[in-house]
Amino acid sequence: MLTEDASILSTSGHGKPAAATSASGPSTTAVHAGEAREKPGFSITDPIFASSTYTFADTQAIVDFLEQKQVREEYGRYGNPGEKVVEQKLAALEGGEEAVLFASGMAAFVGVLMAHVDAGDEIIFFDECYHRSREFCRKHLTRFGVAYREVPTCDYDAMEAAIGPRTKFLISESPTNPHLSVVDIERFAAIGRRHGVATLIDATLCTPYNLRPLEAGVDYVLHSATKYLGGHNDLLAGAVIGRTALLEPVRRLRGIMGGVNSPHNAYLLERGLKTLALRMERHNTNGLAVARFLESHPRVAQVLYPGLTSHPYHEVAARTMRGCGGLITFFLRGRDGGPATWRETADVVDAVRIPRIGPSLGGVESLIEQPLVMSYWNYTPEERVTFRIPDNMIRLACGIEDAADLVADLAQALESTGRDA
Ligand SMILES: *Cc1c(COP(=O)(O)O)cnc(C)c1O
Image (cartoon, rainbow, N blue to C red; front, side, top):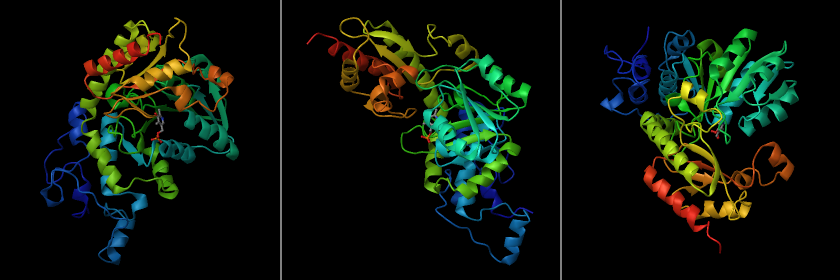
């Protein structure tokens, strides 16, 4: 028997069919999925339940809850109503059974692995994955007897050859950051299937608008919702989406590790998600327009953007992705025609007026950075060669400003710094 409380959580409510179904497009899904038709106070938006705990009318109500006769909340670390709305919206957007929301992308990543690996197991990564994800496995999971291996990104044969009897996870990001290599996710998922090994894709850079990894057979999709899903550079969150049977242990462990969102944060994410499809369309068109401009500019030696035909993984991207998002990596030519020095490169970063200088991506505001300075300053030159981070590399995360303004701004930055002093 479901009581009145359950109507807050149900996706339809009051007998009306849900506004978004599995056949709905991405924008209808982003706006409506996971939300009740009727909300407390007849509000169109979801209330923020600013509550750490949830009370019971009497002892029988506790017993009913424990015997799963009543769907409701108990204590904030195990969930809150706003979080459930976001989880259902994300599951609908990815076409997955269930989503588990975390306080950050890293909390989600750590949560999935801690729930599913045991001492003696082994994890295999494509080597361009987010460095903190690899660091967690390489430096920390190994302390608990979990082996860590890396193979070159998109070398599917090397990944398959590395699988052993205790391999538990194959992990990649797609596209990778900052090199923007695009994984053929069907091929990646097929390797996992053939060997009975779980596959996980960190799809932060594409979002469910541009790529649907679960449909390709991947087991877990991970997102830093801090980026495009939240979309406004105003929150941190993370999520993992997949089959309920795989995510139940993750949800239970989250309740113990405690990396949950505040109800206010969950609401901000719900609000950001409503415009996901609209924003991604703009990130996609801005990314392509700016990448084409940069490729045509004499001061730019090379542009990495999967939407350009010159990109090594353009064919895979064109076949599997709706668009390529806002992130562009490019390499600057110096005033002498060779690769720009780190200082010449920094001068261009400093000369732009619209993008703000900072790490991160996926928000409405464009961001620019020189990876050498922002992320690799304390590494040796040899390490930078290994990680393929040259001094003249710039990473630009296009926001949703007008493409013509971004292009004009980059043009003035490239030209004003390109003249001999
Ligand atoms: C930012 C990012 C993460 C980490 O997410 P946080 O929300 O910062 O914890 C993981 N993977 C990718 C691809 C990212 O860009």
